[in-house]
Amino acid sequence: MSDTRDPVTGHREEIHWPSLIAAVSSISAVGIAIGLGLPLLSIILEKRGIPSTLIGLNSAMAGVAAMIAAPITTRLAHHFGVAQTMIWAVLLAALGALGFYYAEAFWMWFPLRLVFHGATTTLFILSEFWINAAAPPSRRGLVLGIYATVLSVGFAAGPLLFSIVGSEGVLPFAIGAVAILMAAIPIFIARNESPALDEKPEMHFLRYIFLVPTATAAVFVFGAVEVGGLSLMPVYATRIGFSESQSALLLTVMGIGNMAFQIPLGMLSDKLKDRRTLLGALATVGLAGSLLLPLISHSWIAMAVILLFWGGCVSGLYTIGLSHLGSRLTGSDLAAANAAFVFCYAVGTVAGPQVVGAAIDMGGNAGFAWSIAGFFALYVVLSVARLFFKAARG
Image 1: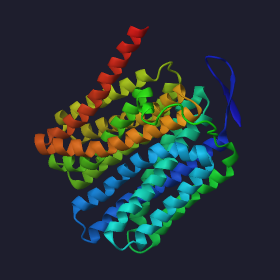
Image 2: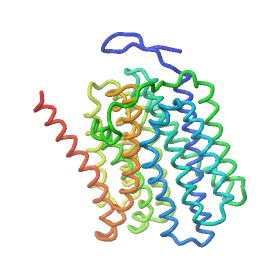
Image 3: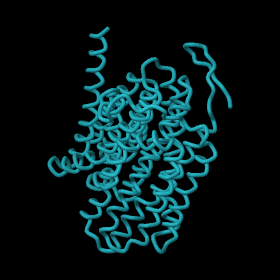
Image 4: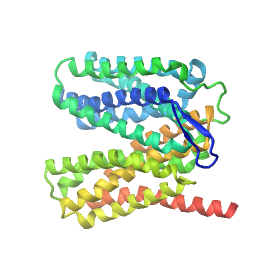
């Protein structure tokens, strides 16, 4: 172990490296499997002649599964323990990943999606709770920045694996299942360091959504903008005149911004007394970037530069929001709030593509930018309102 000192209290704080490594490496293995699985499953359904609407409906089960799993995860961890619950979730996710290969009937993919994404949601909630609980307060932003960066690399590695192994045979499914199973190794090694949940949360699950609204609203906006923006950016880019390869490169640039900005943003948040100021600033940058898109749509380079910073700011809402959550709560309350945090993300991932898609249909190409700007504007209004409320109470 190594240690730091809290800059406010001067007290020595230990960094629990085995815990952090276990949580970060386990969820990164799951990230690789999800990054591999999402394009793999869509391509296979396409080859089977399943209509796009039904493919989209099946994909949407991921958000439904997350909303179902989030409220019960904390109860399971309280009853069975954090590490043991995570190991069971690893086994269920691995079986679900392999099950897609053997499930011939399309209807079977719906319960499989619920099992797979429900289990991975449990892993995300408990990994983030573990990281938040193990990170020293003075370095929480840095630790969560590292987590977000490593997870982004995992998500990026998945599609790369898919491009190498393809979609034929059992091999890609087996690779995904093995990647998930490997997540159990660091969890098992550090099982005695996993945080205990001896007490039940003080409030009902839904109350935690409103307990730290700056964090839960941030992750809702992140989910909506990330999934809505990423899924429909290629459509928007090709409609305004860019080629398919140029459109794909714009997504790559956003991904680079995502990976590059998380550690610096996390370190910056550690120096701030109130992380809500940074969250408001990130949403303001996101709002400005969204409004600029129609004005610079003629220039691919200008779009790439904007999206580089925009991608970092969007993902920063998740990282800093999670850090803000950890600075406000501890123990079972933090675990329950983390579940509420992931629940809000899932709601965002379901709402985002619907709103952005409808905006494009109703408002043309400009609807893409305006709808995303709307999500950021809602958060900016919330941030300003919270500041006025804080000042009024003071």
